Image 1 (cartoon, helix red, strand yellow):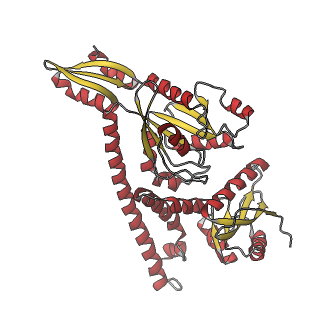
Image 2: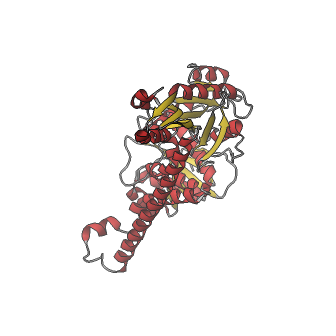
Image 3: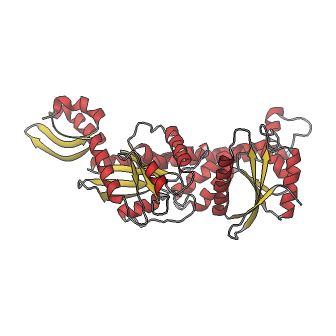
Length: 425
């Protein structure tokens, strides 16, 4: 039987899947292949063996099934031939498309967002991580609750829509909405606690930097290498969901708090960005962002664009950024030279061998030094609120008293210099 299928070889895992990709006129062959490779890795991480890939070329998506009714029959034949447990789509499905495909195929159908959510659910370890994943899953599931939900909402009763079916669906919706509200409250409490923790850090002399980047770029390995963090590292997507912070010394002797964060991916589901906002505040509040990229990956430049897109969505466009191109021990030297051409902000490193790490730490030190200015300030007692503002927005080294005056030695951001200029001494 010929279905224009591409045979794949992957390690044996728990479920057998058929991977489906809709190819639109604007999709290049390289984009399609790179996306399929990423979906293979996502499926393997989730615990699925891809038996075959089915491609469908269309001028635009089919509203009811994405791939068209004729191709659905081809897909059904492929599922039966390979005895598949599920079908994975390399795109997002509307509630209508998902319901129609499940009915036509008779097996599980998951889209790209659902697959990522499943991986996050498997990987969540802390209470915070589990709450964030559950919130994202419920917000994804709410418009997809089984039944004639849209019709029932419109018709308000009548022949064929009365009785327990309507009650069950509305109960499901109400329970789901209530749970979503409760999770949001709990996560807001976590955000509040994080803000308090950050205020305490700001009162110390520690500077902060966040490691961000595409999933599996080596952020955790880099944190282990520079701060001896001893955190979990695995060659799978989304091995890190919960932020981990470690202190290390910069070459200047100043203390740096370096935070590892959840990895990004192309078209990261908006529900995940919203749910993980408490975690991603570590990114928005950091003094410096270190974008870690896998220099050995053929799509490294596309990965950098995806990371920038997520950072733009988090509204951190104005933060200073360093780019650490990791895994240079296995990357093409010519590619590394091209990537690291702007030497001031792009550093080639290897977390595994340690190459380039001293240069990275020097660059971090220089970037943070240029952001802050060390000043000596004198405040009268009635200006104690300004001294508190320095504690809140700067790094205080010492506070002493000269009669009724408060003397503060601190590093402050350029934005605070104007307000403090008349109190400098």
